[in-house]
Length: 418
Ligand code: SF4
Ligand code: SF4
Image (cartoon, rainbow, N blue to C red):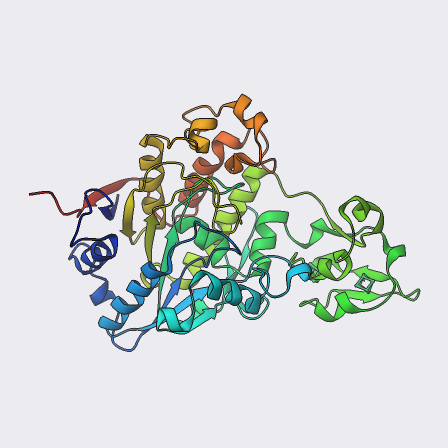
């Protein structure tokens, strides 16, 4: 059984705020992060900057407060994000899929060195390939995990997540950060697409031999044959998708099949994606070490969409509060249980179709048919049978990785009304 400590959003009135309650939680003896951080240690605060025009991402003021608290504990704070998949050629300036582009989004969304009073970094480099490798024999699919290099360099790592839904992976916070947020492009590609063998040269005859994809490929697994046509070495491909942009850019969607040079098979089945993500999570915890990791879930602005989606969307359930644990499973399990018990908010997917992603309440198939995009939690990416199971699979697969407990003791530090 693991301890989870929380402060709720209830009864906040003048002279009190969730930021004050965050400090109360931080300093409480049940948490005691001040002793965990030793003087002059680098504390990497891994969070999500949100995507471009995302209006529900974590408010930067929570991270700024954590920066201030790290400094008070005599640590050296670094605020960090990791590069997303692919390479968004159409929007080079504000894109999650390269480091500078994601820093630009962070800047737009309020995460910059000025607002944070700390360095703001990409923990896996300019293109998400700065990683260290960890063997994870417990991995069901991914046995070698590419962990973001920043997690090796820092002394301590605080994983700070907005707890929310995700189109493909269901509800989560700490575990999704470990399984996707803390791995390089390779880990993200491995989870979504099953690795390099799912990347194909679809129409080699369309290759003009320009060499742009060869230059950008981080593993040198592309080359030209004697006819000046592209050749792909799947064994060395990490499914980062950077090459795609060099041939996809400018192709109209209706011409994609005919004109695109690169293609990938569809995503791996939904449940397998989540198991792969938890293989990554197991590798990250193993590679970094449990003692260097701590978790904060900020369960406010809970939508069915993740920070990685531009859709903000109506809030699904009322705000819950801020949670802390040394155990990434227990902290997510508490939040999932509380979301499941919470009443749905009017005009949200909770009302229009889905009350809970855990599967203990059946999704409303009729509503789902009526508005698939709106009900992002169960988007067309997730096959129908898997929809009620995705969150449960996250928790059970993480448990199989041996990185925590699903049993918890919840300590509520919320100041009580006189
Ligand atoms: S596959 Fe595309 S980007 Fe690569 S060499 Fe051929 S035309 Fe150029
Ligand atoms: S061939 Fe593979 S490793 Fe190279 S850029 Fe494309 S997806 Fe990435």
